[in-house]
Image 1 (tube, rainbow, N blue to C red):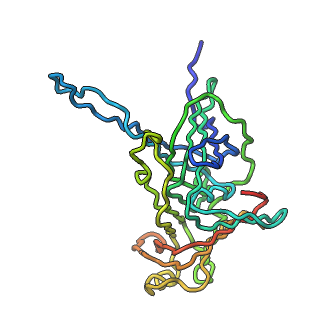
Image 2: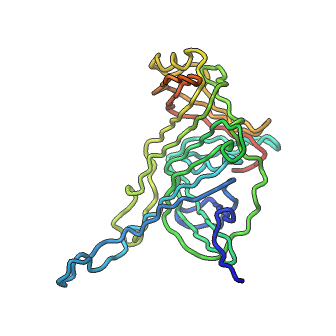
Image 3: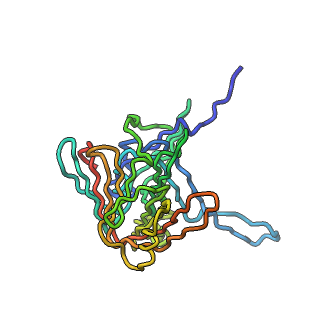
Length: 317
């Protein structure tokens, strides 16, 4: 008996490579992360020709309009290279066993080529070029059971300029590094370690709207031009089990939290990302009644800017 082979996400290889020139595709250099997935929202944006003179109420025909290629990319990180696509330039330094990567906010955005390979007897490969990150988030939540929810999650809201469909998959090594998990998080607020964190996340918004870069231009044709980053925003959330009024006091003060304010993702000695906040403020600190549970502080925060330094065994990001 002959069976039909169906595609499964488990067999996909999702990889990327940094572009030297926006929209000029490159061969991917590495698999993106663990449990990676692509959620596309591609659209041909058909334009209606309502009438061509015929006596009919039906749409006469359609022509292809602007090409729209937004997608969401999610994965569990094993390093912090992806931050170079999130509105930051990176300076590499340090020495063997303690390489450092310092991220600084940039005035332009770096693009990448994404290869989305659905591996089967006949591979189906979608290659997206001119990809940029509009928004990014890193999230985590405590876990006590089996599954995947203990893994830290990165979500990138992206848009591509163009695409191609083929059958050739780039041969790359599978990831062997240890994934980042919820237990590798350490918050320090007002120079004091905050232990009782249930969940949280940090969001980066580059202020990119691809419609800003869509022009009446025959060279670009249906595609967008270089995306334009505008106001860079950093904000996020924290859920903290309440034992005193510390968090409420930070909100009540209606000023920036004083002291040292950092978020550390720590996998081991010289294997971490340290985020230092400037102008950390609490916008919300809601503490709803929990009749049968522990009262918690549900915090929404923002920061004027951040300094980010990764330390690991990789020489160059």
